[in-house]
Structures are given as structure tokens and as C-alpha cells.
Image (cartoon, rainbow, N blue to C red; front, side, top):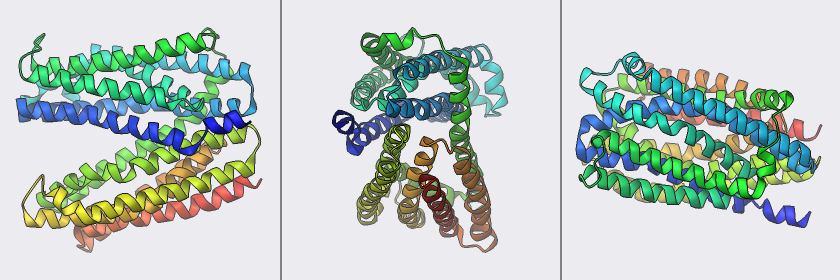
Length: 434
């Protein structure tokens, strides 16, 4: 018991997850930065492709989320045979999803680019970028599932270290490609090649380590019951992320009605907003794993204690970063623009977003905790209703109809987070006491 408790400390899981998330984000930043030095059109083309690949990654999240729930409960119950079966099912399922994603995006590359309805001047670049990036989908699938399994066993540090090394590789390779020192197919394809090679190296490194230490878990033939459990629990979790992405696209269109300055201000603010939620999100991810382990061992009091502890730690992290951006946010935003109107709106949006993170922290932790004990449908039902009814619908009313502008839209975001936190808190207290 003591060994297990030492392995499943909140910070021991949350910090590596935070670092891994940060450096995964930097992958896209590095490509955007170096392509910007090459051509602005290249940035736009890569942006379109990245949005498309982001939707593909949601498919991988289905398997990852489902695996995390089932495996964490098996670990908590001490059921080794179940752990072997789940790991085998997860790897085979993710391999199938990864290969299918590669074949679809590679074989229908031209058709996909045409469907996106982008400007003709961008289509060639986007097609070249997607053609090469498609090769990396299988490796990304492998990385995602291996990282999920490692986290369930309380070994998140290794995947975090590999992610950092892969990012260093990617940054150096991008710089070499843009400056002409690395020339294989041309700048656009070469930047994609560097990203794919970095992802491939990371996936192989993690997989080899897993094979050396736990190869018996890979040899197990996947059972139908485990495959069904992973998908049954994984789809609602991924559905929530998909709904959030779609609602954010709708909100972006709403902000577009307010004018170019408002849209630009929102984009600038969002460049820093991910830092606000980075630690709370990672702590919530750790909560999902630890609560799942305790749920598997039928330790409900410990599960409740962990969730409350994670909420407190996430609140402290949100307060620290919120204060930092309240003090220095305007100066940081000044890196992008000196337009006073845009600066004012962007700073207001950033501060309001910092306030909403307090409620978001509760939602993230309790949502993951509920999924960890098998209650996967309630969080997505509440999230979709509130996300679209309040976060999007009220944003339109306050921002455009009542003409409160960007402040009204971010007030709607805050109302959405607060409402969800109320319902999830009530649900968690009821479920954990059953």
C-alpha cells in the first residue's frame, strides 16, 4: 500500500503531465514560428492542416481516455490479468486507429484539402504539409496510448522526458530546414518531415522501453469485453472535447461579428490563456488516474479526499498564474501589438479568462473524477447543455445583441464554467457516497 501511495502522489503525476502538455503545445509553436520566417501563406496552410489533425487526435483520445479509466481501476483492484488484457486491447485498438488515420489522410489528401475550402494560393502548401504529416499519425497514436498507460502506473516522468527531447529535436530541425541546411523535398515538406521524425523517435523510444519492462502486456490477445469497455467509456470523454472545440469555433464566428479588432484581441489573449489552465488541467488529469485507482480498490473516502485536494491545488495554481497575468499581461500582450484598442480588449479578455479558470479547475477535476468511477455520461450531458446554451448562446446575446462586446462574451464563458461546476459538484458528492 505504501509503495502504491508513493507512486500516486498528485504532484508526481501532475508536473510531468504539465511538462508533456507544454512541450506538445510547443511543437505547433515551433512550426508556426519557423514557417512564418519562410512565408505567411505557409503559416496559414499549416494552420488549416493542424486544425484537421487536431480532430483526428480526438479519435485517439477515445482510446486513451477509455484505457485510463479501465486500467486505473484494474490497478487499484490489483487484478494483474485484467491489466494485461486492457493493455493488449488498448495497443491493438490504437494501432488500428493510427493506421486507418494514416491511410485515409494520405490517400485522400487532395480531396480533404479541397473540402476545407481554403484559398487556392494555400492549397498546394497545405497538401504538401498534410501529405508528410499523415505519416506521423501512427506514431502519435502509439505515443498517446503508451503515455496513458505509463500514467496509470504512476510513471509519467519518462514520457515527459521523451517529449522534451523530441521538442528539442523538432526545434533544431525546423531551424535547419528554414535556413536551407536541411533540404530533402522543399521547405514546407521538410518542416513536416522534421515534426514526423521527432514524433516517430519519441514513439519508438517509449514503446521500446515499455516492451522491455512489460512485453507480457503486449502479447495478450485483446478480449471483446475490454475493447467494448474502452470504447464505451472513451467516446463520452472525447465527445466532450469535440463539443468544446466546436463551440469555440462558433464563438470565434460570433466574435467575428464584432470586428477585426475584437477577433485579433481574442487570438492574442488565447496565446497566453493556455498557460492559465496548464497546471489545473494537469492536476485534474492526475486526479482522474488516482481516483480511478482508489475506485478500483473500493476506497471511496480516499477518492473523495484526492478530488478535494486536487481542487485546492488547482485553485492555488490558478491564483498564482492569474495574479501573474493580471500584473504583467498587458506588457506581454504588447509583444504582439501596440494598438491601444486591441491591447485594452485583449487584456480584459485575459483577466476575465483568469477569473473563469477558478471554476474551470473544479469542472476539470470533478469531470475526470466522475469518469474515473465510471460515471461518463453525466459530465458530457451537462457540459454540452451548458457549453452551447450558456457559453455560446449567452455569448451571442451579451456580446452582439446587448452589445457588451468581448467583455460580454467572456462573461458568458464565466457563467458557463460556474454553472457546470455547481452541477458536477452536486453529482460527485452523490456518486461518491453511494
